[in-house]
Image (cartoon, rainbow, N blue to C red; front, top):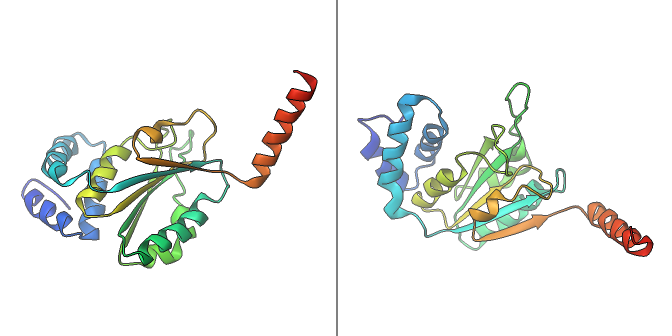
Length: 195
């Protein structure tokens, strides 16, 4: 685990692309424990000079549209182009228990086995906007670890969860064909009857 005495070494290992260190750094950043807040800030300060070189992509869309399945194929395509890919897969949290299933990674089996990919399922923690509270910081960690493409997959969203658009260079909206057909039908009906 990263602590005061191992921080400098952790930054070095992170810069070398060590996935275990990246996972530990993400756990530290996500922690709400007061002791971890100051250490998180120091870690972020130390990695800032090594960020900003990755292409940031957001993938958002309706629940069940196939975002994770698409991401599996797209991620493998990027890897075949000799790119390193990091995925931050946000899953919804229960408003009752606060728990999350974190199951998006199960639909990315080939990608999760690749040595040049890193997938981190994270809970939304009840945070609105489609992402998680610390998504920006998690992106920075992936950039510092040398990933060429950092992808944020949002929870299934409607039309008002747009926070991820402010974090990425390019946002892909993924929706099912059935939803598109229903939407077109409603618009056509509204136009015809002038509702």
